[in-house]
Image (cartoon, rainbow, N blue to C red; front, side, top):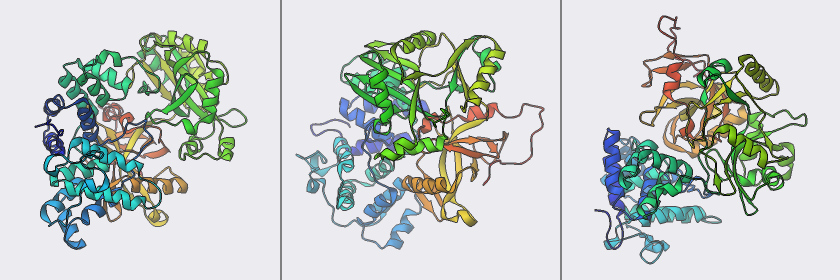
Length: 585
């Protein structure tokens, strides 16, 4: 049972994880979790929720584990008395890294166990082991976080020493969970929606309130902490500076006429810029800029920081907008060039000069302590224009009910080098994290955002790279990712090189020329059409898929849904092509 003088054991968390993984019902998963979480301390519950979803750090924390699956495998293999052939033979029955680790530590004799105390992680240290040397939840969490602080000469050896101590202290089930947390994919069938259900049940709080608070306050784990500590979850419903809010998202629409009809005939239209979504926080002279994935990207956008200090007319604000790279003619530079600004922390001045950024804003979430989320869009837009001045600029917009005027505005946006327009209901509130029907995006080229879940080495000239990509969409019911096609088309050699390195760093399984990866890389994919396909569990496949761009600014949670693709299937009676699968690979 959870609790006790020395805290909850990590084995309790591993037991719950296995129970959740073996339960098919969403409702039962949530109830199992709720019963477990409500009996923990606020810190334990917060950390349990994070670990169960494969996280050790919040998105806006700069720290990273920097542990790959080969590192985990090397460490675990060093703990058993067996040769490499025997270890691999036992591990081959595992469906993922965690299961392979569990099988190896269950079947093969262990060498001398190391302890976390040897590395300052035991009782009296950071806190690793409870009674009789058992690993505690808080001890495991602290030891995992300590990995991010290990750097400099000899850091690999010191990092592996902590990992050896962790796995030495773990029984096979605990090691299964540790391994999967380390690679960031717990594979419990635990979507954020299920976690939100569990938090609501554990706290006895309405689900809508937990969902809204999670989108505003940093996630379900933070809502759980506040509720178990005796706080009022309602206090988390309003944004606070320097805690990023999940951005409101737009649904696709085929054309501006359809978008106007969906929104009741009158709407506001804005340029849909080909840039990077940003959220700017300002208070007390401090500026922080967050990506749509809630990562702190302040150091990558010095122009935005300077522009905020110069152009903001209030003492406190949270602003929503887009950053684009512009050439000397004022036209946007290619998105791939823009992303170079975000792929390194140490930005040379020459790169800043060559790829200058400009921020365009379209919403305001907080002004001088006053939340504006629930105010109508047209009111928020007026507030925005009152509180900013150059070099901060509002995104170009119009309000109209005339389809012809809306079409002309769309053409103007495309002619200026942008993707299209976003059509917004004037009365709509800002709903953090929602992709509802109040904002509709219209682009000239039909694309969807998908997640790479696996890759294969290419053929011929592409044999050096992982260049054949398995693409997946979200199942809105389960939150899981399901494959909808493959492609090798669209990337440059430079991008193939980058993608190969990135996929290797997030690999969770490797077999010959095939790797399965943690679902992290989002790509924007253009396609000709969608067709029914028995090949994929999703039941649909893209035809002639081509990657338009790598969206490192987007998270897997923002990927398009299978339902969206099913909407694009030919209607009954329309002729379907008989080719089973689109794409290039």
